[in-house]
Image (cartoon, rainbow, N blue to C red; front, side):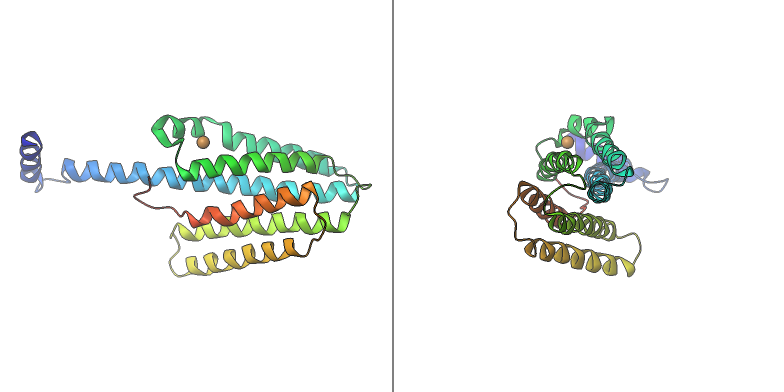
Amino acid sequence: MMKRIVWLLSCLSLMGLSACEFDRHEQHEARHNLSYTLKMHHIHMLINHALQMSAQGADMNLQGVDHGPGMLMKSSELLKRAMSGPEMASLHKLGNANKPLMEMTHALADKSTLLIEQMKNLTSKSENKDSIRLLNHAIEVAAAGSSMIMLGQQGMAGDIDAVMVNHGQAMLGEASGLLQNVSEESEYKILVNQVVHMLIGIPAMPVRPDDD
Ligand SMILES: [Cu+2]
């Protein structure tokens, strides 16, 4: 305690010169904490993009377009890169492994992986193609909406941020409405439903300077 007071006093005495060490320390702490949620949201945007790519690939598979399998392969790779790269390893090393946002991210990535594996099995001969198309569209809408909300939440663009957040929320509403239009209870629908609901839940944990 005494040490801290002495240090603070010496800090204060230096304040006329430049930024005090204490302030710098606080700023550093804030940056460290901000970077956790910010990095997590950027990882989410990569997952969202992998989902958007995969939904397009799945549709191509249904139409028998040759490009489908390649897109699905690339979405798997992107998902794996986002989740298993050195950036994620370092977030874990810094003690973020058991935080709610981290746990939700891994749950989302696991479900997304299962869904993309199912998408790879789709062909022009698959059953219930109309329902599957609607489900793929729901994934695409939810992923785009979720990314738009997270980008708006970062508060980088003044008054337009609210427009982004509002439109993103409308898209998430649209996606859950689409799910209700699909009556078949397939494994595919269950997975899509789980992924869409996680995408709705994630922006509810916005970037915060004091996240823990
Ligand atoms: Cu992690």
